[in-house]
Length: 239
Ligand code: UDP
Image (tube, rainbow, N blue to C red; front, top):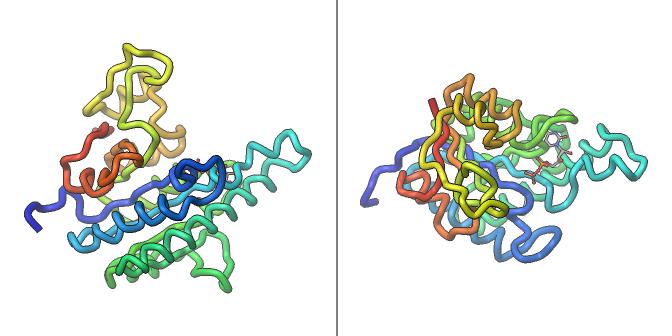
């Protein structure tokens, strides 16, 4: 390739909503394929890629609080939703010529492998795209926290948080027209200004392990690759 990637091993957090496309629920095949093609393309650049995928397009634990199902049960349902998304992404990535391995934090051996750090590292060495499903495997956590956790234990150089907006702003850009996007912001400033990059547990893990978090828009075609190459539009949250 013409340029060298800025990061050699990345963890990309894809929210469930990113996979719905224009629909209000579930998986939009064209959107899944677009993201999968981009991820498969990163392998051609020699970048090691892991994904943590959310489940909000199907189910969120907090939704059931009103319906009589307890929160923990709802959270397990949410984790199962992430497994469906992971399977869809894995199948699509393989159609685009890369190999993918789904590992779930909850055991379901008939469906996919169970997460094991040594096995995941071996898959990485063999060039597979890793897709980590079922979050952390624990209720009361989020897939953002799972993303920071897996990024730390897999030795990733960066956590790429694909979102609906193209970075971190001084205020909510949808509500405040004077909001300004940061190119870079320190972990400490993000906390002091309550910039809500990720939930507190996720952010604490990233900061503790000095993993830069790059927040960028998933809706911009090519944004994952551009971010990995170091010429994307987004906000770098770092030390
Ligand atoms: N979840 C959980 N533990 C985890 C990760 C996820 O209990 O470690 C549950 C939680 O109910 C959450 C749902 O799975 O609402 C889907 O994950 P998340 O909301 O993080 O997905 P996203 O917002 O990224 O689509």
